[in-house]
Length: 115
Image 1 (cartoon, rainbow, N blue to C red):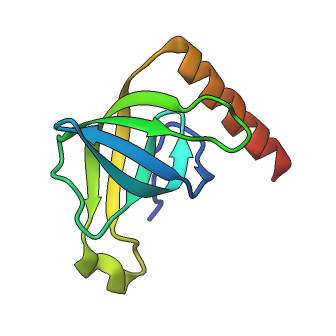
Image 2: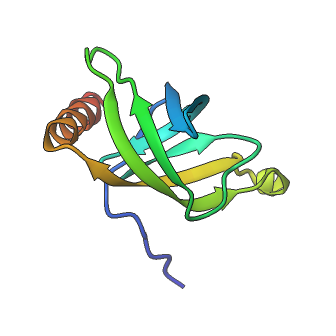
């Protein structure tokens, strides 16, 4: 049986402190990986699927933070850790300025070229 890859974008491993702004409060999570289409955030208490988020993502050696809106599309609960999974939530980017998208795409391309 062949396993199909569902992802549309190349991902890079990136652990960085992501800021979420929700209900005028700041929440902080660490990313595990990043693509131009989304990010996986590590947390023991992932938000419900469909939750909309505003995020700021710092990138190493990039002056500006990427500002983006996203939606939770996947949850990995702590009980799934025994299967080797990291608890957290997959967030699909839903709204990003063309400038931020270009900065993110350039950063990912540079990181992939170094691998």
